[in-house]
Length: 134
Image 1 (cartoon, helix red, strand yellow):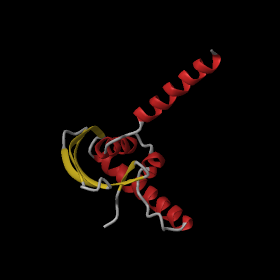
Image 2 (cartoon, one colour):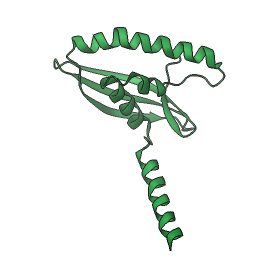
Image 3 (cartoon, one colour):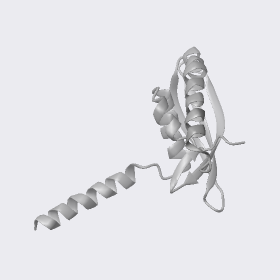
Image 4 (cartoon, one colour):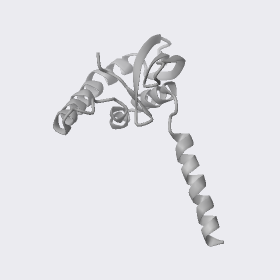
């Protein structure tokens, strides 16, 4: 009986974990942009794709540089606009092979300005990442 109860809890925990992970490129991007909005910069950086063949030292250097740019310039830009009020996913177009996508989104700022943008996304190990490669 104890094994059955333990197994039940394990199944619920696994299903909860799976349901919480962003399953679409739009949901993933919104999650990363929300991290950025909430100044969770390190969490945002974890959502950026870095090529797998990049050596660890170079990856850490690039992550640090991106983090510095976001904190210095990005935060100031958001502050000028009164912060991000909302993020809306407008559309997502997933490639035929399911490994990349383009997400169209709109950010509304505290000062009332709206900005529409698109972002390339890449799927690795069943997780969507922001693709900043050219």
